[in-house]
Image 1 (cartoon, rainbow, N blue to C red):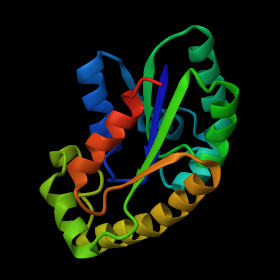
Image 2: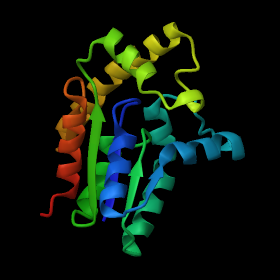
Image 3: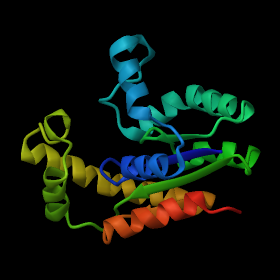
Image 4: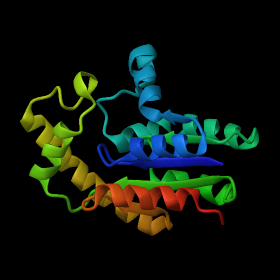
Length: 186
């Protein structure tokens, strides 16, 4: 089974992936690592970390789709986590391999901006956290943009019948619900 966890920055994608990895022993791959590989290793491909998540997803899709199809073909269980996926793109793989792929998106459409900014600083990954090394107004702008992006992702998920989990409130409980949904035997 391939588990794909996507959505907006700071919505809990990595926490979901790590929890499933620990609980089920399934390895995970962060798409951020691949994007940084393109950014720093092969910049000529035009995939870099300064693009909007939807732009990265669109440019990255052919590569990611081929990678997922190979993992499905070789029957490797894996968790893939990151922003670089769109509901309208992953829908194709879901329809083609409904018994080999599970997907959910995570975002925050109705979060209190100042509380979310505070949470970003409080729960940061320390000095290696790319966002909290930026000035406060940059963090506020980023979170504000991600609220709007969450709304677009949620709407696309509804259109394609893909599960969307909103972490605006009850953050950890919502993440637990996403994990339960992904691991549910059907």
